[in-house]
Figure 1 (tube, rainbow, N blue to C red):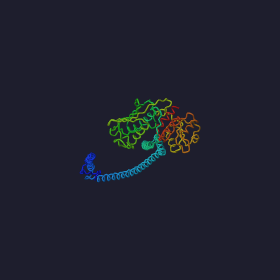
Figure 2 (cartoon, one colour):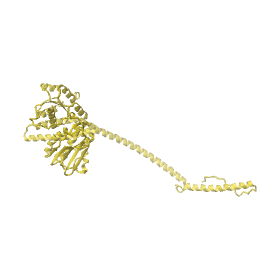
Figure 3 (cartoon, one colour):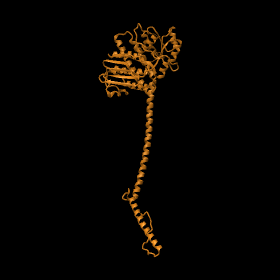
Figure 4 (cartoon, rainbow, N blue to C red):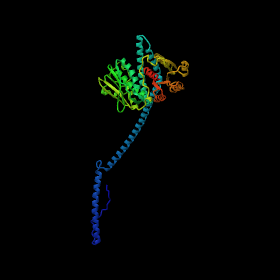
Length: 470
């Protein structure tokens, strides 16, 4: 194949004698020379084109191969696009399935959180009856049985309370209600409670009080410290448990230490995960779900108050949470619980306590418990029934359930109405609902809030404080 079609001139033609002919011959010679040079250049270019990337020196084969490669690239690109489309559809289905699973889990969680009131009501009544029975003069064998019943109910309360708490936290229905309070308001009651618990296990509880004022959610912080104390008692075979505080620049560090087996370094992060427990103390007293520290971790994150752990295997462990200080006047703080007094000094003896609850079992349980403490109890589901049974006596303390039926006023509203009728009436709202709004509304109304299942010792300490203050 030739790239150029050049005219071939006859150089053998006779020469003319005229000068014009001579000039013409010279031009023809130059053209022929240029023709030969261009042919050489064309031949070189052809050889270079045919030699670059060709198969067996054939440029057309190279072209065919390029076309084939382009077709293969197009087909593979189409295949890739189809695969990506299929993966997109699969991913969409997986996302939909994940959303359905999360919705189902959230629905389950919200259901458990919502029905916690109904779940805890019968347990609360049983605890009230058992606590009341413990104050009766019974034969030694019967007293031991009552003690076993009380401890079993407490175990059930702890397990069920743990499940409800983790459900509330996961469902997002549990919110923090931060307010200033004296740390003694919390720690005095916990120290008194766990001094008895530790005594049953043969342990000593060493409590160092503090006068610091902090800002946190009292109920949630109590849950954290209670978990620390429960674990310390559960895993310590002998020795003592420490409850105290240390002032830090960034806040008050509330500490719970023990002389237990300690926690190996490789387990110190894992124990804050769900259903994880330390690999020791597998006796009957170590019953638990492994959710306590998982709840602590969630509450700590919610409160933005860090938890720390230090431990030496074979020596013991020290859990702590650091809570910011609060600047508040003493008059705005919750009252400090008084320690139980002897019967001669006990202000509960003969005091009139009104109980309003729409659950008959709770009413009977409160009557039995408060009556065993020497209170004169008037309990009913309505105010009119109470006033009819009171014979004109003025109540000293009102204990009222928050939920009083679908179409009735809340316990806070009812207590406010009675306080207008009986100025100075100390009111305690009792509820299984842990929502921050209820706790905040109770505090703003100048009342006190206790959560179900009701802890008898805490109730008695609060009643003693309110009556002494009154």
